[in-house]
Image (cartoon, rainbow, N blue to C red):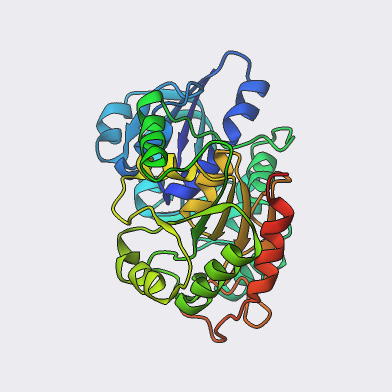
Length: 337
């Protein structure tokens, strides 16, 4: 049994989709699973022993056009993914593809794609379905693939060299294995303006955590788009925080997240990395769907006291407001005893 998964991005979505590997291996004993993705996501898949070959989308057509898979799974709705799915030989397909120059999807995958950009419904109905959904992403994907869902987890494997990066950082910053380490990741890149916790609220959160919880170390995370934001946060705080920097590679970032006992984060890449590394997580939501996120009984979801959920707008009609004390209480609940 040969299976091909086409899942290109975003990186966090690629990580959470790795949860299907165990289900596929359980259903199709001895199956070989290959994966097509983008270059940006290669590093989160490369150490995964459940994956056979990893193909990058740029050269995948030439390398796979003569292949024939027993099962082709395409879980993206962009042109590249659908075009590739239409050019590869298969006995069965589940997911999206091109049909006479029109993007469409198989009936058995409607639970997912009915809510998306290529929905058979109009945008209003698709958005309503998205807002009404109460299933996690993993539940949905397992359902459309007809697999038994037992909360199988996403997989992110860091090799020794990658783990050593985090260990060196810990040694440099005097972070002990026995200590309590809380990661603070309140930015969210540039696409969703209201996914972020404000600079002022983040500074308040850091100072209150330091004052209310004894003997903790806080690490401030961010990506390239958070350089100025994190500088402002550090200028506002009255207490200490360790700066992880904003120019780490994807795997370096993951290695630093791995140092944390608890991670406070937006619904962003850090959430999916932390989940795959089995960290305890507090995640705050706006404007995406909290229902889609599987916490594996290790996390707490925080909803804004004012604001909208599941609107998926780059800028929400109502700017979210969060209760910082609610986030702090969630951290306290998850702190190691």
